[in-house]
Image (cartoon, rainbow, N blue to C red):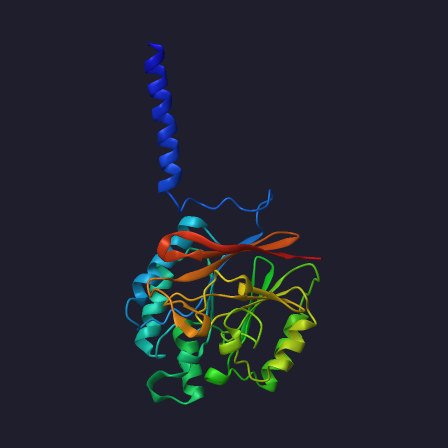
Length: 302
């Protein structure tokens, strides 16, 4: 083979490698640490099944979860999984989830204000419907996944998200259960605390929030996830730390920005969480564009 022929083959191989890197944005993630993650899970919110186009966005989100992190350990849905809290909307949401999620992934679902809108129901009827249709142990509950503690809080009252005394006492006790100061505790509530993560200046609606905040603040290893605002994950206040770490979860149905301006309705965003011995890594995903967005956030564990 002549020298020119060899150069052409070499050029072709280089172009092939470059094109593969450009055209395959959803290749599996190379994790941030040299060590293997102890647990990996996805956090999404505000799916609003029953809204126009919501099912397609939801399915694509779940497909990318599996493409990026096959056999991930858990998936958390942080409220407003339905648009009006109707039985059919719940059924659709859970059927899609069970068919598209990683086979052995633990399901964690919290109630949102839209789950209180169903069928002209009382709050109690809405809560009973949530438990029945999702199969969760209650409207607030905890689960252990691979030795890590997941705690789900209930709004208890729709939009105002009032956590009543019984739930607060339960939370205080649960946070101390098998507690290790260098091991994260993951807490989920649909609404954010006021004036914390991006969007909470407008949408921070945790009634009795000072009591809830005070309980969580006593445990600095808490990593708290909230949705509700639909605000973008491209903002630096996606993570906020004051006593413990808090994250906005974006939204699957649509994304908003400053002053509640609606962004492109095609956008849908969520988080991926990798847990290591000494740190928690949180990545932000724009599912409609198959792209990572914003910062990669690190929560250091003492």
